[in-house]
Structure formats: structure tokens, C-alpha cells
Amino acid sequence: MYDSIVTRPATWADLPACLEVEHAAMKANHYLADVADLYFNGTVGDLTVAEVDGKIVGIGKLTLLYDGSAWLETLRVDPSYQGNGVGKAIYRRYLEEAAELNAPALRMYTGVKNAVSAGLARRHGFTIHCTCREMTLRLDDSPILETRFHRVGQDTACRLLAPLADAWRGFLCFNRTFYAMNEPLYRGLAYEGKVYREEASGSILVAGTRFQHKKALHVALVEGDVDRCIAAAKTIARERGIPQLTVMFPYDNQVLEEKLASLGFETAPSDFISMGMYR
Ligand SMILES: CC(C)(COP(=O)(O)OP(=O)(O)OC[C@H]1O[C@@H](n2cnc3c(N)ncnc32)[C@H](O)[C@@H]1OP(=O)(O)O)[C@@H](O)C(=O)NCCC(=O)NCCS
Image 1 (tube, rainbow, N blue to C red):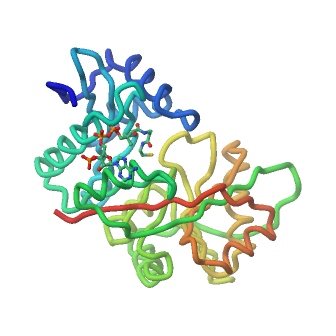
Image 2 (image 1 turned 30 degrees about the horizontal axis):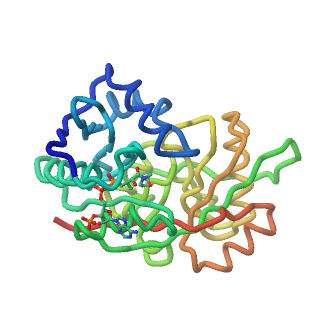
């Protein structure tokens, strides 16, 4: 334990030190450089840094989502400083900030095998609310089935998506951000043009990106004719020059997993959990 761990909001000048922490803490999945502008200028909620003896050794972002709940992300502690309360100091700041922002709930995600991250969340009163499987498809130049999906407006999105919340265990994912399914989400997604329907087949597709817009198109929900939904997602991705589709869905939806596998999707090596608490 350190005598003093100071937490404070990061500034742009801290970015290089934050990137060092990210790279030291994670073998892969480095994305802070790509999202820094979004984190500093496009979200409500701090990127917090934790300092020991004036050195930045930990980082963690809190982001308010469409429904005002707090999403905790990019929690990283330099391995040389792990196990000494830095992560807990960032969690304390998360809880304070969530109270300041009047967030009704706090949530995070981690890998099912990440016992430390899950233990840290559990220690602060979080419980698991959802386990998800991720599948990805690299796109090629082969012809894509023609579809007629169109964006829907906010009221239609509410009417279409609300009945599907149970089947999706109450969460939709973009860029591994777990959004609770509720009216503010449906309206926000429709406003951003991420909710599509094909009248003739009665199919629904929710797809888009939260960040890293050129890396993967995130398919957050498919309903109806999955072949047609995926064809529509491929078309959107091709139009935007995106080389990959990523789908996250409840881990026990075997029917969807088999369907996606038959379309060439590959399953990630392990699943993800999202944990949360209500204030
Ligand atoms: C997860 C991480 C941020 C934790 O930071 P840290 O500074 O080492 O954490 P702290 O020392 O403050 O807290 C440790 C707490 O984690 C929990 N914990 C640690 N090891 C654990 C284990 N094996 N099983 C369950 N819980 C565990 C405990 O609650 C412990 O506190 P306690 O012993 O007082 O109860 C850090 O390990 C890290 O950066 N990992 C790599 C990136 C990462 O996994 N990020 C998380 C989300 S993807």
C-alpha cells in the first residue's frame, strides 16, 4: 500500500503518460490514442489518472451513456504498481463522480477470466448482469445479397426494440460498451441512424460504431432473417470501408452462434461479463 494515491482528471498533457500505462498494462487492445479526442471532448465524465509520488500509474474513464448511467472503461494500472490499491482508488473516484453526475447505475465489462478486474468490481458492490460472446467476420470482396433495410425513426425504434430486450438479456454492445436496453438508448441509437428495418422480411438490424470507426462495424442486434441482417451489415461496412463485422450476443444463444458460424464468423477465445450496480 502506498502512503498516498492521488486521483484527478487527466489533461491533454497527461496523454503520453496515460498511453504508457495502457501499454504497460495490456499486451493488446490498445485504443486510448484512438479515443482520446472522444474522451476529452465528446463525452460527459472524466478520464481519471491516479498518481503515486507525482507519477501517473493508473487510469480509468467514466462515461455517461444515453440513459445517464455511468460506463466505467479503460481501467489500467502499471503492472509495477498493481496490487497496491491504485485500482481501488480509481473505483473510489468512479463512485464519487457517479454521485456528482447523479448517474443511476454504474457498469463495466471484463473478460470472464479476469479475476482481478471482476473481484475489484465485486468488492465495490457490482454483480454480474450479463455474459456475452463475441464473434467476428473479416470481410472480403465477394458479392453481397441485396437487401432493402432502411433507418427508422425514434418512435419506431422504441416500438421495435423494446420487445426484444429480454432475448438480448437487456444489453446491446458497440465496441464492447454494454448499453442497457431502455427508451433513452433506443431514441439515441435511432437519432444516430443505427437502427434499421427491412419491411418485406420484417427484419431488424442495429449496427454502427462508438469509436474506431474504420476498424469494425458492430452489429448490436439482429432479429428476423439473420442472413439478410448480416448482408445489410456487410453492405454498410463496405460502403464505409470497414473490413470487419463484430457481433456480441448473450453467450447462451446457441442458435445465433451456429448461424453466425455458418456465415463464417469466428468466436473470440473467451467470453465477456458485464457487471453493474445501482446507486
Ligand atoms: C484490474 C487492475 C486495474 C487492478 O488494479 P490494482 O491497482 O492492481 O488493484 P488494487 O490493488 O487497487 O485492488 C486489488 C483488488 O482486486 C481484487 N482482487 C485482486 N486479486 C484478485 C483475485 N485473484 N480474485 C478476486 N479478486 C481479486 C480484490 O478486491 C483486491 O482488493 P482487496 O484485496 O483489498 O479486496 C489491474 O490489475 C490492471 O490494470 N489489469 C490489466 C488491465 C485490466 O484488466 N483492466 C480491467 C478491465 S479490462
